[in-house]
Length: 339
Image (cartoon, rainbow, N blue to C red; front, side, top):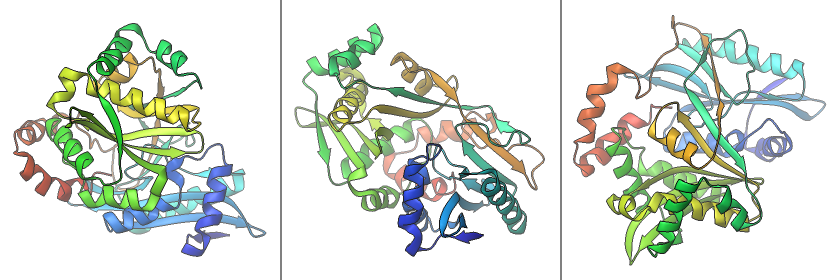
């Protein structure tokens, strides 16, 4: 039997997620509240049930945009998603339900964001990789595991007198993050999105801000899940470049995560060949391919809605020149549909 998630089932859903090796932080039920509250996107969180026990889950988000197309995604705005099932029967039922819904909604495509290939008959985007690595309980061993040149950057940040503090409000983080994505030519998410993330996930969503003599240098929003830490959204000011603020910041996240008992550092996804890809490689992380598998419904080929698409280059160049306040005003209207 397939059902749609209701608030009364949140705890059961999350218990299933936390007990499943194939599930991730991005499968948690709270994301449904995030999408509804921050973006007003329609969600379809399906689960299968047998004898009162959940046997499979599938979170889906419908994003319909004049500029960026019409898609059904598991899970939108997240690096991982897709079906998590205990058996083939549950998996097949959820896959069939998703394909049926995709056709009822008339979307261009149905997208499943998997760490491992699950739909071998579907084409997939050969674009993204993820970086995950086990970390040691000993800080010195983690420092020694960082390649020499990158380790020197971290030590330079420490020597410069940088300090990390935990912010309970998102204001400083949002200022830094919005400036960083503007500089990359990317529209920023609405401030409301980050407020909702902090509110919904509570202590599992932490903001670390780096300061130097009272000045804002960098800031990152990280998620905690089981024994993992996921620094997910981050950025730095102009000071960060000179003071090695970003290098120090991620070391500080790792150091604090170890003290909390974390064993895995998930650096998240990057597009192959980009600056963030090289940065994570310099930390000694090895890329793992992601399988963003696509069921083409109305589209004839995989939509290329990403900054590497040549047709967006003029837009990106223009966006980089926007005054920051203007980018903060216009950006959220665009970014809410960039799932």
